[in-house]
Length: 281
Image (cartoon, rainbow, N blue to C red; front, top):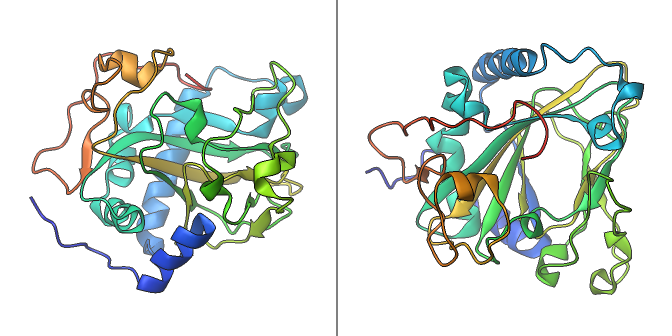
């Protein structure tokens, strides 16, 4: 079981992540390799959305924020090579300062031309996993700026801990988390990023994505990693935990939640039960 990091990041990057709750690691993925991954994810999204011919205006507010295709590694082997990449997982382990990481989920987040802002929120409160270290890798396939659906983060907001859950689906009126007193009026900072780089954010970092004012789809892929010692803390319905038979008090591991750092010798088994092709689960 390898324990040497394929890519070792600078201590300053770790410090920045710990202080701000987000950081950019530039030039992580070779552009030739990124092109292969991009093609694989593009095809996976095409497959998952083949029967959806709606115009953007006919979609729900949530669907106007992005096309969401989750757990692509389970249905598209070429995407699995990105989702399970030990180089990327090794960076995640360094930033969280943990010895082992499991995969929580991957997802394509494609914001169509004219797509709306992604509502400000934290990720971790969506899931019944307590405050165990969790981190997301946000991987752009295109140059992303403020006019093209760029991410924005509230610096240091992860230190506020778990705040009120935001209904980003807009099935109810979402909580205005940017006005939460725990943030002390801090404002989101837009992060422009180039292909090959990765933006990382902590599970408790408040973040959003701007609307896409361009004429092209903003293509991004995310991988979410969780401390391998994390446990399920609540009985709320949770597709990945319920599918894997993870009970309250159990470690978050099992089918569909494979260890990705240190990398195991054999690839993980693909779950027999596959969730919905698009949208949240």
